[in-house]
Structure formats: structure tokens, C-alpha cells
Length: 86
Image (spheres, one colour):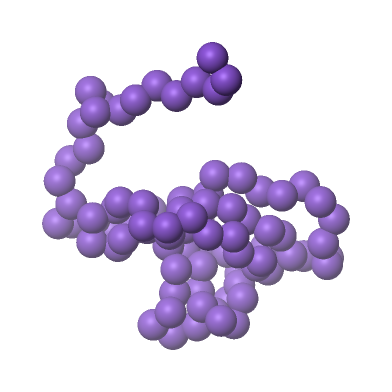
């Protein structure tokens, strides 16, 4: 998801953020706003950089894939199965 100045103003201009969303908070907020949790993404490689929580306007969110022209293809074999509490 691309988060730029159309969602929260602090991500305007060159401070836009690519966020791989992992969860959306279901607690009530201001009308039209949402808390998102995820990982900021390196635009060049597609790799996760840091965990982030962002408060944003839903109308300004842009769901799209980052361009990773220089990124190596991701291998399916490299994927790991994750389990909780076993």
C-alpha cells in the first residue's frame, strides 16, 4: 500500500511510505480514519525494513504494488511456513 500526503500529511512529498499491511485495528477511531500495522518496504528490493503503525485517512490510501524492477525474483521455496504457539 502506498501511503503519501493524501492519507496523513506527514507522508507528503518525498516522505511517502510503502507499507506491507499486516493488520488493521478494529477499535473505533475518528470517522474515515484507521490504524494500520505493517512493515515499511524498500522500494528498490521489496524487502521489509521496519515495523510501523500508521494512523491514516481511508480515502487517501492507495492499494498498489511497489515497482521492484531491480529486485531478484522471490523463490517459492524460500517461503517459510509460520505457526503460532506450537
